[in-house]
Image 1 (cartoon, rainbow, N blue to C red):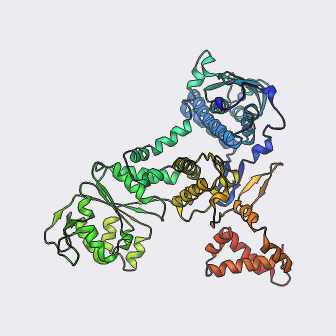
Image 2: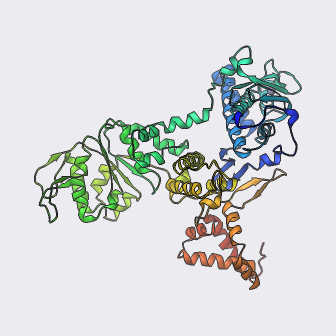
Image 3: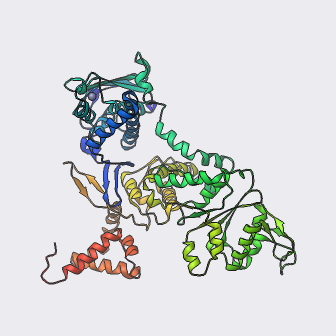
Length: 587
Ligand SMILES: [Zn+2]
């Protein structure tokens, strides 16, 4: 990235107060989303951890692993944070002057509550030279260390050293190693760190402790999606290429771990999940990780085949079985022999087809429609459903014996709203994918776009996120930035968000879509409403009534229509009915 910039040599003297991101600018990256229990620093999920709990963690790790290993571990943790913050800064201020954006890192470190940083001096140039010296005041690590161990002989701020190293390395694109030369934990007045290119330090111990290769985060992501990338390279289908199994969230990794456990067995697998969560993708991955990977993978959407044809499709047909059966042909079972047969929307099979299907599972043979001989098939069946099969059984629409046969290894695939921390990864993936596919040089999302995507409800799951990003890439200006208005057309982002104000307090509760809507509705209807002398309360009541009428009284759907959560709309409706009672104040 050095070559892209016009700077030759950059020093702390070049700092220009007018263009340096202020603590306030940096603080705007922070967003609290208490409705869904998340804190975002730009597109990274964060958490608040009690300093005392962090102190206890440090002590326990030092006792369990030994002081050296614990120090190295915190160095790596800090390094990984520093790399993420450097990515954030590069994304937030892509065109700003290098020296001025560099100090955003120390400011983020302060915002995150770790340490107050004062640059003493730093300079770097395009050839990769670097020298940096910073003073740390009131370091959280020193404070917790001294509380537990008192003053000793060694510096203790290894997580901060890791952070500085990760930040500078990712910022400059070469390995920069920091060291703490003074530390409050060894009796100095404050902590002081010095950073140089890794090769310029005499011994390499501190560098090894980061376990550093470049871009550790990217590697982690790739290791998760490698299998899928390989799949798509092998000439896999479109689905595998555009919707890879990308994710690091707990619920996603749990589903993936189950898939890996059952893949090598012969078990029948049932995927359960809403539309758009990627059931076929999982089935495909299961096939490719199984011993049948060399055989065919045949996918059938049972809901897409007319009732009258479903048996012929699945089991095959003999010539003359019925008018129009002019030739014998094998069904999907026979074609999947030696491989995997994936039956999506299994609940839509007729009861007759279910009976025949069960017999194939039990006997391992199929009989073609109009045929008399049994044909042996060696097929692993993988099924999927987006409805509750137990309910279907209760209602008499699904055979109980078939249900038990299929439900040996159910794997529940989480909806996107339950794996929200994967949204940034998926956004990045689809942005790169569709920019390449449509030949667009779109590089990033605007801040309102990021907020809208992170807060949206995704009733259509990953497929919907994918569509939004593709639309954004298409409608964004050439070599420009994807904005919320390029993606959201009729969809309404839900949920509230808070950002941090200049005085450090939370502000807002305004959701991104409200900003989008207010832009577009500042037009004629608003003027007409004002002219008509309607009060805000009356207008609000009418709005809720209209939304409820349109959704036939479905409060959740009405809330979605208005860009509120169900709880928010409930609250407002309740408040509305209370204010009409005599003698009650209207807040
Ligand atoms: Zn220190």
